[in-house]
Length: 436
Length: 171
Image 1 (cartoon, rainbow over the protein chains, first blue to last red):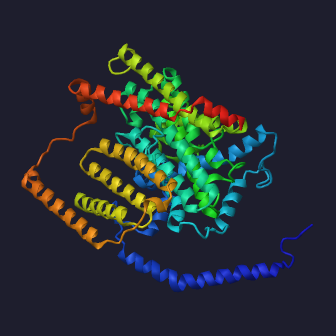
Image 2: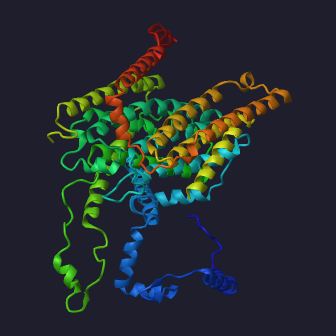
Image 3: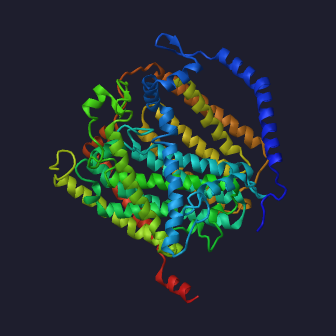
């Protein structure tokens, strides 16, 4: 049995820890405290309840929930929270991380393998953290003849574009980072950036495999963008709006997939192609061209591109949910109204011992937001499952077959979908002034 | 706020336009062209017409620039890029540009466009759509015919003849 640290002594460990503590205390006293004091001179603290807010009152607020809760509630309405945490990056990155783990484990089960198993003892639950640490600590190798500025820019651009896509997705009523009037058009505009970034990645690496992968990605994405856009026009005709939140609100009674199954199928196939997933993973075909346009990326650059591509996967699945499956609409699985006694009498945590009473802003999140988020996550997980599933089943298609599917079949089917939508509108069934 | 934004976008547009012409590397020139087109989209947003701006991004930055990059990557650089150091042509070009800009500026400043102030809300894209379907319907029909015929033509041109496919299969 090999020993990780053969010269280990407990005394060395204690000495190391005490040394570190000593130096931390010395540096904090000599540098940290003066810096904090200088910074405090220049910061104007807001006045709350007639008293100047200072850092020590943060601890005060922690022990008094009636002061802390309104602050937290206020903070949750700010743009910063929306961008960083809930409908924005944090939420999407959490889903992306879950998707990566579930994909590995599920594919392993499909193919009668074990998959991640050792990290974290229970079914390899910590494998993702281990992979992340590995990627961060690896050296970033840049090919000698690469175009360095472009090569550095590509991972950042890819992750940023995927983040911009995520920002357009409405998760719950009112919970969307960028609620713009032309959301669907903005989605099309953002999607158009991905082929540029991939082809630049291929070109900037100055290597054969990435270049072939980049050109393939360009072919594939550009030709599947057209049926993707066309398949969504039917919904725009029926709802009469381009705002994604309004499109969700129009599906209170029935999701659009009931009336436009053809559009949904076309859109789903286009999602698979845009995400470069099997059976359309020609740009990253690992058995033909190493890793396609990702071949020369290493370390955290590869990690950023992977993060971006899984954010993109979440965003496309969420777009499918928003457009075809009714977004956050669903039966109430969460109590509709907070019980009246809770608001007036407070919550009895332990009988006769602790009663939290009259706390302003206690329903921290609106009930409909929680209910909507639950439904949204359930539907998105279902769609992501169907995106992941072909990877365990299908082989890769040839490039000419791929282009033929895109140009001959999907575009024609998308037009069929548009005619169905037109028929529904002109026969007066749905749409402005329709029966339903 | 709008003035700083306007200045920033104007500087971005003009600088990237000059860069698109002057860059030695054609790829960077293409990227600079993307910057110019994106700057024009920014102008559209400042002019309260996000509809046009988003189409500008989706069509010009997203598709046209991709085509340009694609062509640059596929064509050998020496065939299309021969640098001629000819100062006469450069000065002539600069002079021509100055003449055009001065005359255009004179026309614009004399047209009284800077004295127009309006409080009308920006035109909704739904209104444009209604106009297209009612008053301007012949133009819409002509556009639809041109577009559909070009799509069909592209499909026909891109189609492989069966003989070629069979030949490849026998290989």
